[in-house]
Image (cartoon, rainbow, N blue to C red; front, side, top):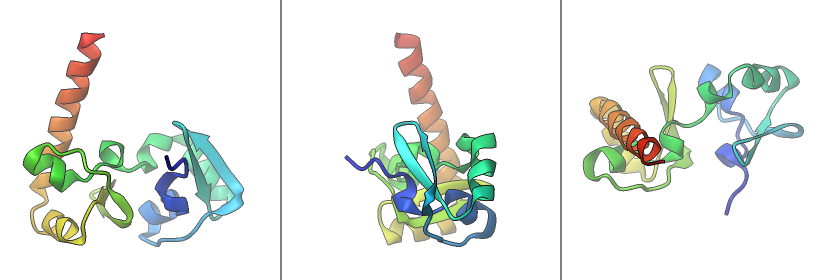
Length: 124
C-alpha cells in the first residue's frame, strides 16, 4: 500500500499553478494516513490551513470510470487535471481526455460518490 500522497508531488503547487513539482522531504505533512510533500514551507502552511481543498477528489478515484460504470479505479497522479478548483486523477489518459471533453462526468461522479458516502454513514 502506498502511503505517499499524490505520488510525492506538491498538491498546492499543482492546484495553484498547474505545475507538477516534486515535494521535498523537509516539507512534509501526514494527513489521512498518507504523507504529502511540499516544495516549500509556504506551501506546507497553505495546505495545513485547509488540507481537503488540495486533495484529489473522490478519494483519488478516476471520475470517468466512476461516473460511467460505478467502477472504483484508482486514479494516477501522473494523469491529473484541475477542473474548476478541484483536483481529479484519472486511471487512463483516454479517461483524462474524456473528462476534458465531457466535464459533466466530474459532476456525475461527485454526485454518485456523495450519495454512496451518505448511505454508508446512515448504515452506521
